[in-house]
Image 1 (tube, rainbow, N blue to C red):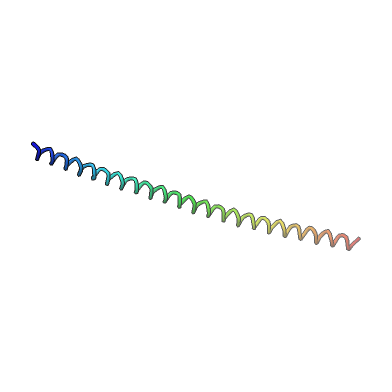
Image 2 (cartoon, rainbow, N blue to C red):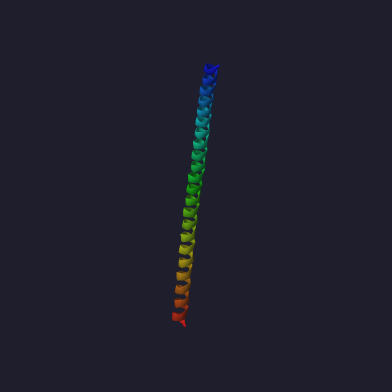
Length: 81
C-alpha cells in the first residue's frame, strides 16, 4: 500500500509539473502575442504619424507658396499705382 501511495504521489507531482509547464508555456505564448500586437500597433501609429507629418509639411509648403504669390501680386499692384 505504501508503494502504491508513493507511486500516486509521484504521479501527482509529475502531473502538477506537466500542468505547470503547459500553463507557463501558454502564458509565455500569450505574452509574446500581446507584445507582437503592441509592436504592430506602434509601427502602425508611427507610420500614420509620419504620413500626417508629410501631409502637413506639404500643406504648409502650398500655403507658403500661395502667400508668396499673393505678396508678389500685391507688390506689383503697389508699383503700378
